[in-house]
Amino acid sequence: MARAIETFLCQPAVEVIARILLTFPFWGSGLAKLIDFQGGMAEMAMFGLHPPGAFNTAVIITQLGGSALIILNRHTWLGAGALGVFTALTIPLVHHFWSLEGERGIVAFHTATEHVGMIGALVVVSILAARRNRSRSGARMMGVPAE
Image (tube, rainbow, N blue to C red; front, side, top):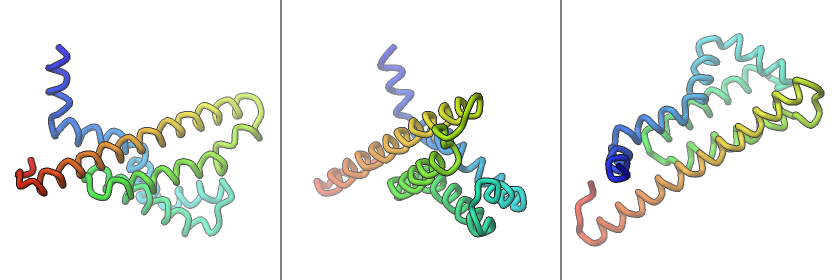
Protein backbone atom coordinates (compact mmCIF):
# COMPACT_ATOMS: atom_id res chain seq x y z
CA MET A 1 0.00 0.00 0.00
CA ALA A 2 2.76 2.46 0.93
CA ARG A 3 4.51 1.74 -2.38
CA ALA A 4 1.29 2.48 -4.31
CA ILE A 5 0.87 5.78 -2.48
CA GLU A 6 4.50 6.70 -3.15
CA THR A 7 4.06 5.85 -6.84
CA PHE A 8 0.92 8.00 -6.97
CA LEU A 9 2.63 10.93 -5.24
CA CYS A 10 5.56 10.79 -7.66
CA GLN A 11 3.32 11.32 -10.69
CA PRO A 12 4.01 14.67 -12.39
CA ALA A 13 0.28 15.42 -12.69
CA VAL A 14 -0.17 15.01 -8.93
CA GLU A 15 2.57 17.56 -8.30
CA VAL A 16 0.99 20.07 -10.68
CA ILE A 17 -2.44 19.57 -9.10
CA ALA A 18 -0.92 20.04 -5.63
CA ARG A 19 0.72 23.29 -6.75
CA ILE A 20 -2.58 24.52 -8.18
CA LEU A 21 -4.41 23.63 -4.97
CA LEU A 22 -1.73 25.22 -2.77
CA THR A 23 -1.95 28.50 -4.65
CA PHE A 24 -5.74 28.51 -5.09
CA PRO A 25 -6.38 31.06 -2.31
CA PHE A 26 -3.93 33.44 -4.01
CA TRP A 27 -4.86 33.12 -7.66
CA GLY A 28 -8.56 32.96 -6.75
CA SER A 29 -8.26 36.22 -4.82
CA GLY A 30 -6.06 37.81 -7.49
CA LEU A 31 -8.54 36.99 -10.24
CA ALA A 32 -11.44 38.31 -8.15
CA LYS A 33 -9.57 41.58 -7.56
CA LEU A 34 -8.73 41.80 -11.27
CA ILE A 35 -12.27 41.04 -12.47
CA ASP A 36 -13.85 43.38 -9.91
CA PHE A 37 -11.12 46.02 -9.72
CA GLN A 38 -13.43 48.52 -8.02
CA GLY A 39 -14.32 45.95 -5.37
CA GLY A 40 -10.62 45.23 -4.84
CA MET A 41 -9.96 48.93 -4.40
CA ALA A 42 -12.81 49.16 -1.89
CA GLU A 43 -11.24 46.29 0.05
CA MET A 44 -7.86 48.06 0.10
CA ALA A 45 -9.49 51.30 1.28
CA MET A 46 -11.42 49.41 3.98
CA PHE A 47 -8.09 48.27 5.44
CA GLY A 48 -6.61 51.77 5.24
CA LEU A 49 -4.28 51.08 2.30
CA HIS A 50 -3.90 54.21 0.16
CA PRO A 51 -3.85 54.76 -2.74
CA PRO A 52 -6.21 51.79 -3.10
CA GLY A 53 -5.68 51.41 -6.84
CA ALA A 54 -1.93 51.02 -6.44
CA PHE A 55 -2.32 48.54 -3.59
CA ASN A 56 -4.93 46.54 -5.49
CA THR A 57 -2.63 46.38 -8.53
CA ALA A 58 0.33 45.29 -6.39
CA VAL A 59 -1.77 42.59 -4.72
CA ILE A 60 -3.02 41.29 -8.09
CA ILE A 61 0.53 41.13 -9.48
CA THR A 62 1.83 39.42 -6.33
CA GLN A 63 -0.98 36.90 -6.10
CA LEU A 64 -1.18 35.97 -9.78
CA GLY A 65 2.54 36.21 -10.49
CA GLY A 66 3.58 34.29 -7.39
CA SER A 67 0.99 31.60 -8.08
CA ALA A 68 2.10 31.25 -11.70
CA LEU A 69 5.75 30.81 -10.69
CA ILE A 70 4.80 28.08 -8.21
CA ILE A 71 2.40 26.27 -10.55
CA LEU A 72 4.92 26.35 -13.42
CA ASN A 73 7.74 25.36 -11.04
CA ARG A 74 9.88 28.21 -12.37
CA HIS A 75 11.71 30.27 -9.75
CA THR A 76 9.40 28.65 -7.21
CA TRP A 77 11.38 30.25 -4.38
CA LEU A 78 10.59 33.71 -5.76
CA GLY A 79 6.85 33.07 -6.14
CA ALA A 80 6.62 31.38 -2.75
CA GLY A 81 8.71 34.11 -1.14
CA ALA A 82 6.52 36.87 -2.56
CA LEU A 83 3.35 35.09 -1.46
CA GLY A 84 4.87 34.29 1.94
CA VAL A 85 5.81 37.92 2.60
CA PHE A 86 2.40 39.04 1.35
CA THR A 87 0.68 36.54 3.65
CA ALA A 88 2.80 37.54 6.63
CA LEU A 89 1.97 41.22 6.05
CA THR A 90 -1.77 40.53 6.06
CA ILE A 91 -1.57 39.46 9.70
CA PRO A 92 -0.68 42.88 11.20
CA LEU A 93 -2.57 44.82 8.50
CA VAL A 94 -5.82 42.84 8.33
CA HIS A 95 -5.93 40.02 10.88
CA HIS A 96 -4.60 41.87 13.97
CA PHE A 97 -6.41 39.64 16.46
CA TRP A 98 -4.58 41.18 19.42
CA SER A 99 -6.42 44.46 18.91
CA LEU A 100 -9.88 43.01 18.25
CA GLU A 101 -12.45 41.85 20.77
CA GLY A 102 -14.95 39.05 20.94
CA GLU A 103 -15.88 37.04 17.88
CA ARG A 104 -13.92 39.30 15.51
CA GLY A 105 -10.75 38.67 17.52
CA ILE A 106 -11.31 34.91 17.54
CA VAL A 107 -11.92 34.78 13.79
CA ALA A 108 -8.86 36.95 13.13
CA PHE A 109 -6.74 34.71 15.37
CA HIS A 110 -7.77 31.59 13.50
CA THR A 111 -7.18 33.27 10.15
CA ALA A 112 -3.74 34.44 11.28
CA THR A 113 -2.76 30.95 12.42
CA GLU A 114 -3.95 29.52 9.08
CA HIS A 115 -1.77 32.11 7.37
CA VAL A 116 1.24 30.92 9.38
CA GLY A 117 0.50 27.37 8.19
CA MET A 118 0.28 28.58 4.59
CA ILE A 119 3.66 30.28 4.94
CA GLY A 120 5.05 26.93 6.09
CA ALA A 121 3.54 25.21 3.05
CA LEU A 122 5.13 27.82 0.77
CA VAL A 123 8.51 27.11 2.37
CA VAL A 124 7.99 23.37 1.83
CA VAL A 125 7.17 23.79 -1.87
CA SER A 126 10.33 25.90 -2.24
CA ILE A 127 12.43 23.23 -0.50
CA LEU A 128 11.04 20.51 -2.77
CA ALA A 129 11.68 22.60 -5.88
CA ALA A 130 15.26 23.32 -4.76
CA ARG A 131 15.89 19.63 -4.11
CA ARG A 132 14.55 18.69 -7.52
CA ASN A 133 16.68 21.37 -9.19
CA ARG A 134 19.77 20.24 -7.28
CA SER A 135 19.09 16.63 -8.24
CA ARG A 136 18.72 17.57 -11.91
CA SER A 137 21.88 19.68 -11.81
CA GLY A 138 23.83 16.82 -10.25
CA ALA A 139 22.56 14.38 -12.86
CA ARG A 140 23.54 16.72 -15.71
CA MET A 141 27.01 17.19 -14.25
CA MET A 142 27.45 13.42 -14.21
CA GLY A 143 26.22 13.08 -17.81
CA VAL A 144 22.93 11.47 -16.82
CA PRO A 145 19.95 12.80 -18.79
CA ALA A 146 17.33 14.58 -16.70
CA GLU A 147 13.84 13.05 -16.42
